[in-house]
Amino acid sequence: MALITLRQLLDHAGENGYGMPAFNITNLETMQAVMEAADRTNSPVLLQASRTARKYMGDRFLQGMFMAAVQTYPHLPVCMHLDHGNELGTCMEAMDLGFTSVMMDGSLEADAKTPSDYDYNVAETSSVVEVAHARGISVEGELGVLGSLETGTGEKEDGHGFEGMLERNRLLTDPDEAYDFVAATKVDALAVACGTSHGAYKFSRRPNGDILAMDVIEKINEKLPDTHLVMHGASTVPQYLQDLINENGGDIPQTFGVPLEEVQRGIKSGVRKVNIDTDIRMALSGSMREFLLKNRSSFDIRAILKPGRQRVVELCIERNELFGCAGMADRIKPLSLSQMADRYAAGILRPRAA
Image 1: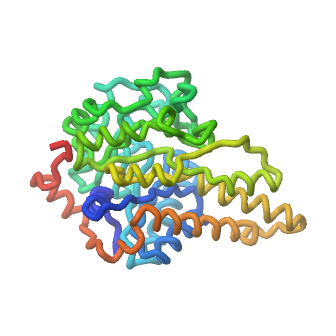
Image 2 (image 1 turned 90 degrees about the vertical axis):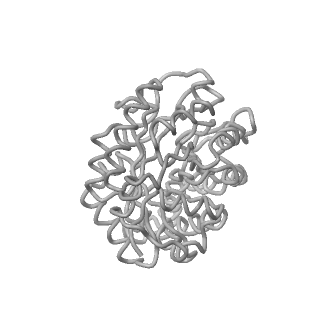
Image 3 (image 1 turned 90 degrees about the horizontal axis):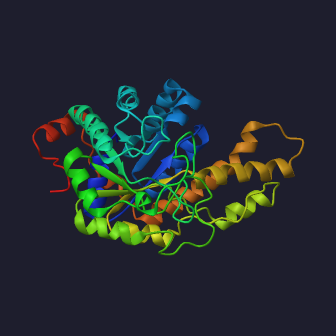
């Protein structure tokens, strides 16, 4: 097929009632696994890379990997998304590399660690939307600061996350403010804060309503029934992956992620994009530990990485099926960036707060 934008993909998801797992790519093996899982389930693909992933791999290498994925699986629609852009310049760099979607996370200032205020967020996000929409590229914004409702702290991962502590109200997106934010910025998707956080250590116990506020998502959906919502920090941190790591020399304290049934609950209330990174890292690193413990004389990098890649394939297949995007790939007719730009200019793609 072709590269498509986040807006087109999430519009299709919204029309058909499914959610899209947004898989973070950190190396070749994660890219290969996500694409194989999509091919086996006939799923559209939402690949995303953070600023630190870009730095680790190098923009040109990353760009080449994205293009290889599209060329290897031409029958699958693929969205290339920048995760947690911190300022206009970062987002424009990604656009110039061929990303079809960018996130402008104005919930934090450009240092990616200082919580911003509402006016700053609106101004910074709006500046990205203006540039991106003129190119036909979609934009995800964020309102509310991602962090733990248990501790009031943020989980800093890949150089992104606030420092110190915040009051509970700062860690939850206000539905009225969300309505105003979408109308003011014209974002195509809105990431909301509901108690999820980056990394493996999200919750010290299986989350319920006091530490995972799914009711906030439902209230925002009532205010903005046509707005595509996004859950960040939504890895499930499966027990079997914790055990895999610890049984093979790791030392991960007991922790809990976002239960799959809660993600499915969110999908029923307008969540169309679900970010997944930690689960992939755990599957790959746990498998490497297991292989090396059982094969102490091996130094074959390919053999070390192969079992983990297969575990990631299985994990991604499960997410595609449970989120409802399996079988949807060949039902999407891709639109070019120029076609999307024309639609934005004509007002066909209005902000979904109307």
